[in-house]
Image 1 (cartoon, rainbow, N blue to C red):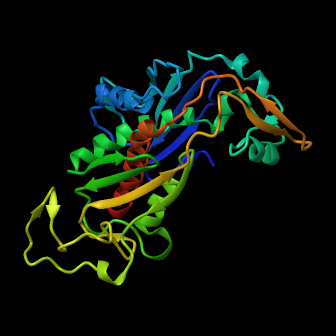
Image 2: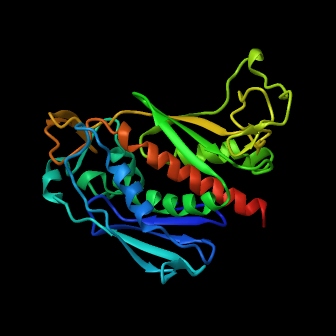
Image 3: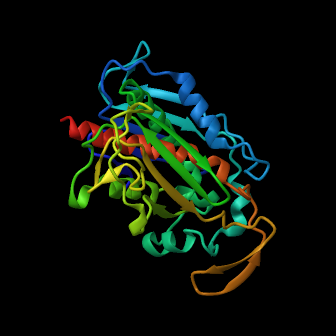
Length: 302
């Protein structure tokens, strides 16, 4: 599926070296003044600041096609487009008909019988541009409700914290808040794990001695080993979780690939690829968290 969310719903489209990446946001409340500078700054974060990120340099200029008038949302679908301008599709000709180890090449070919080999097509991290745009919109709505989302990263994972989410968001059993967050995070390219909370008998949260301010919400418990979620429902404490990622799998210096007949071939893949993408991931994690939390918050208030 190419859509995510129920009341705040994002549908994305586009391939890595196609004409554009874009999306449609349905369910955005009317009257929101959309801060384009924030959208641009989030897209800048997605490009990363490491010498190990791709040399591809897209302007990532957002063209708003509908849903905005005089800078404010209309409540109708927000449609947007980000054109792919720094494309070199011919650079990927060496990968035509070949599947890289660890990439989605083989699984896409197995499912569809036809795939776009140029930069990974739909499986490329380029698709996350649309998520970041939608996340920037969701963050602005959440900010009006006193909810903020931040993240940090280390060598192979991103830790994300949402402060200000009120108690009572999420559903019991199958639509738990933590389950919905896991679903969102594992949809990000190269994500491999999701964890929330600390296991073990010594990590049971006890009630705080007093109801004292904590960030933008009350201190409910003396610790937060549960990560702000109990029984699948937010408890008002900070929502904290961690997402693990595997490193980029394309080796620009050469790699052993296989065709669909099973033949192996050593190739230099060509194209431009991240050697490390960890600096680009936090804003994507935050974007999916913002979309998820806003969608669930709207459901809780509907």
